[in-house]
Amino acid sequence: MSLLNRTDLQEFAKQQTHALTNLWFDCSDETPFLPAGISMSQKLENERQLSETLDWLSRQLESSTQRGFDQQRFTEEATHRIKQAGVSIFGLENDQVNCIEQLGINRTAEAFYHQAKAFDPFISFEDIFQASRNVWTSNYLQVLLGLPVALTPSLFAYSMLYPVTDNYLDDPHFSLAEKAGFNKRFGHWLKGESAIPQNWNEEDVLDLVRMVEKQYPREQFAQVYESLLAIHDAQSKSARMPKWPEQLHVRRIAEMSFEKGGTSVLADGFLAAGELSAEEMEIIFNYGAFAQLMDDQEDIEQDLRHRELTLFTEAARHGKTDGVMNRVFNFAHQVLQGLESFKNPQAAPLKKMSMKGIDLLLMDAVLRTEKYYSKPYLRQLEVSFPFRFEYLKRVRKTIRKKGISAERLIGLFSPKVESLPISVNASELAIAARLPVMLVK
Image 1: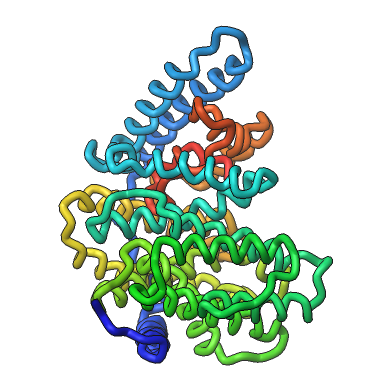
Image 2: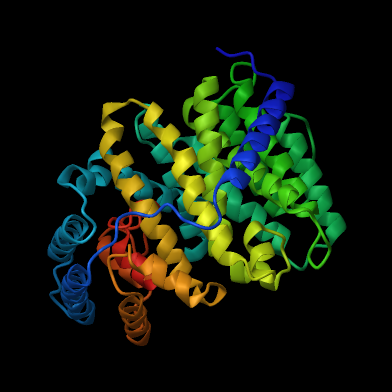
């Protein structure tokens, strides 16, 4: 067992953040690393197949409230059609489109839904959906590390800390002093120190920390708690960052982003395995840094509204969003190569599927926030996308008109759960596995 202590982990996070920041600025902001272009004839064929699938799905939704609707038959047929789309439209192989089910990630998703509702009966669909993204990250790491895919107590607790703490810190009924006091007490609990919860929300946070302690005794798994303190420290630094228009050097913004994302997913790794090698720590930290870039790109409009300083808001304010997105494509190509170091044979289909999906998800994210990008840049990305951008925008508009929400769609796929947030959206990195929800989110 490694004898990594808090000082060592802090130094590791500092060095890795420095290395990633150097890599970020070494990446070209002029030419993105993109997959091969797709011909117009192939795009039109893809659109025909997608429209046919969506027409069928629309008819099923209209009849789903009628007496005699066969839920099980619908689920089987819809799953088959989605897998077919994954193969024919996105170029996936059969073992790749089947790996989510074969690895048991869908069963973990259902377990998380039930446990989240048991822990907090009033938790919203959106909160479960957001927390479930961390569950999937944890499952992904379990597969890479050769561990059984399971919703362990500590992974459930860490995933739930996101909505529980965020809701507390976003609640306008609590003063800044009260929130600062909570953050201090939270740090004490992560260190194993005593502090009295001040309200029911803080009691929930303490209960979640105790779930981790029950699975990982502190005296045996010090790394687990050092990693949780590392993300707590990074989140606290992020919260103290100034709002624009106050100036902050762009390198500092990048460092803050990479530290927050890297330590967040590193904690997932330690909670999944208990301990990690130095090589595993580096690869997982890098993966988290990239994931943070995806989150910041997705949240660009919200972050601009709240005057948050991120690489994307800084670029948008100066009309340089095309360039920062080019860097994301190139950065991803560099740092995600490290995932190949995980040699677990069972992970191969999931890795291949996710790597094929990353570029497509990035392009889709640009389309969703297209007002921040130039028209020539959108045309450049569209060449490598399986659909015409205008077609996909029309599809989404039609879906919204019909009132098809992610919650309704996912619930229809899950006979046992009225709104299960991952069974179809099992992989944020596998575009085919999340096709139905991708269209309505």
